[in-house]
Length: 344
Image 1 (cartoon, rainbow, N blue to C red):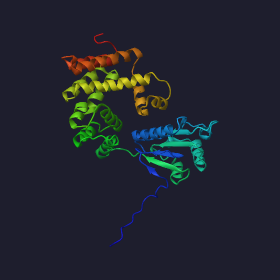
Image 2: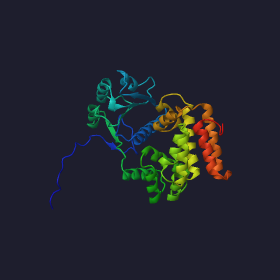
Image 3: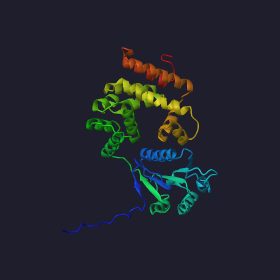
Image 4: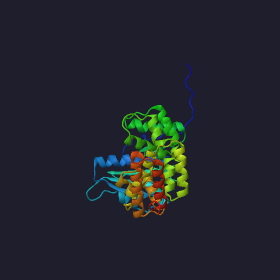
């Protein structure tokens, strides 16, 4: 039998390559690749594992592109009481020269009890010398790759794994419908999977997916909610009519509004950086950032309260309290888009 042909390939990494779904802490954790949803999940899992092992773990967040020399050694050094330390560094792909130099030096002698998590999106080759050093085994690190989820097959695999990890079944037709509905946004796809897992008991069927996300979600529930929350009244009404004409169910439409406004209310009541607020509220960073952007569209505590009341009223009406669910939806959109009582 002829021996198999050998092909040239890039040198293999000398450190363990872990799935973002099952990361493990290590002295150095490199989270690489552009898919932010996966990177966020991996980072959160590392944090939760360290917190479970020792609730006193000290957490410090740094940016590699806005770095003060000497900071890395200061925040990784043992404290008076010797608590474990978790140091998370964002924007390594834009790192300063000072950070690059000190991070490479740190690999030679990582601090005992410290976990250094480095996030590199791969958007640039900046920091390559540091990545090469980590991948060579210096510092005793691990790498968690988060490659881009681009085509429908990748998205279907991603969504299927969401349900498999939760030990829940989704039938093939439902999976196809879900991926088609969110073909343009992996973060929204992840959010939709989690919403179905939370709201629905038993098997996820195509009928359930159609009920929640009938038509295309980007052009139905979420578009209506986004345009109304942005204050674009006319476009919001057009989007609402298009959603209903496409067969969208009023109940999930109201649910989309409720989900976004509830998040805005929770985020709006907190002060602090994105990562800090995300930790306190147990939600992804991107969700906090999106809520803060939404709140900048002229929202006040009064108008937000008014909008939440309008959604609560519409929720009851589309579930049977009113004979005209379409009017209930139009009134809700009017209150939210205009930030004023209906008819005012």
